[in-house]
Image (cartoon, rainbow, N blue to C red; front, top):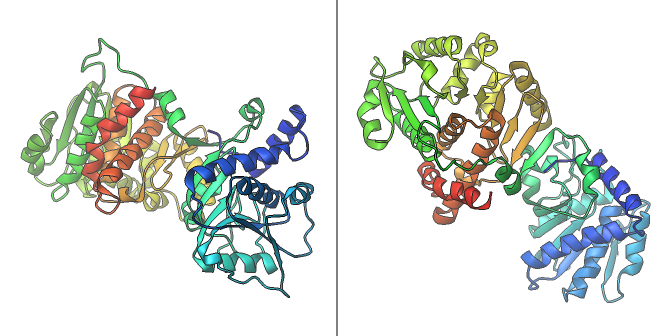
Amino acid sequence: MKILSSAQLREADTFTISHENLAPGALMERAAQAFTNWFINHCGREKEVAIFCGPGNNGGDGLAVARLLSEHNYLVRTFIPETDSVFSEEFKLNLKRLPARIPVVRFNHTAPLEDRHLSKTRIIDALFGTGLNRPLTGLYAETIRFLNNLHAEIISIDLPSGLFADSATPEDAAVIKASQTITFASPKLALLLPQNQVYSQQMHSVLIGLNIGFIENLRSPFYYVDSVSARSRWKPRPRFGHKGTFGHSLLLVGSYGKIGAAILSTRACLRSGSGLVSVSLPRAGYQIMQTAAPEAMVLADPSEKIITELPPELEKYAVVGLGPGIGQAAETKKMLGNLLEKVKVPLVLDADALNLLAADKSLLPKLPPETILTPHPKEFERLTQPFTDDFERLKRLREFCQQYRCYVVLKGANTCIGTPSGNHFFNSTGNPGMATGGSGDVLTGIITALRAQGYPAEDACILGVYIHGLAGDFAKNEKGETALIASDIIENLGKAFKTLEETA
């Protein structure tokens, strides 16, 4: 699913209206109906609905939603700030269509907004949509602060009012803090970035019938990975396949005190379909690995506590995964340098492997093409340089991937995958319970296994992140978010892969 800019969405609106010869307000009616359908399916009638409508088309959406909800027997009130703003034609059209039974409350500085039991209502935010490029001021800013202070449930139409869709919003700007945001036609980039998480707890995208052919011809570097796009990349296992068909993974993992990271990545690799898995780790971890993962073949390093040497015959492996729990000893750094000089197969680098690269950036140009790196934001910042906001971080991500011809899985909510082509893929699965030690080690094992099975780097990243998050969601359903641990993700990988297999 393409993530389109606000300008591109306006172009798609205009093309759809002209190409389909739609009557005035018809496309807005589609959007309002899509929002109303979602609202009816997810929100009961136990609370009154208060809809705050701005002067533009987002306000027109709100007025249309008010009419449609009233037709479904919701108790609805509309609120309109009175300023010197000019009302859009579609706002005026939907205001005329508003039934007399729906109260319209107008307020201004002379007649200020009061609670009027609003804290006990369900609020729909239709003040402003995607067109803002400067902070709101005056009555609009005051209204937003008033609504936020109510601590009521707020559902935003298309985008929380005050939030910039395609650039960084100033920290002191007045922005609605929504419980849910229902976006039209395309996920909004701003809602996928960590710096904006306070403005919308959840995002849902609904279709409004924009012309598909026009959208297909639009260019965007940003994509949203949902179940449909994940399934399109899935490859069923051939009936006559054998363990050699599905690749031999080599994991270089663990150090004294961090053998758990080695176990987690190994078990995840095994559960993700690699035909064979070999693990090289310090001698201190030999016995426990043989016990914890009997399906894996274990290679003991000469060192008791760290990894110092590469296994022989690197060419016999389909992929090498390196990093979880390895530490940053000088001998381990030397081993990483040797690996980059010798390896001829795909690489997956995580955790301390990334920290070693960040400590000696002269190693970065030695990365083989299509190497996969899986940093969290701070690790990525150490690999590049500090950034002022998430939009700048996306720019750095694109530049880094293109410079080093690599793939970067930038971990977090809506994990973003950067590619050498300049495209970015945001993930749709996962939950806050996965923010726990070892979760990244599990992801390394999954992606390594997918590369071993012959998935291209881009597909391995996208599928690996999606499956990782889906398994985490299944684990959340069983354990809840607070009690979820990394092993729970591994235990639910089977269910996650089965979900893809049955629907692909």
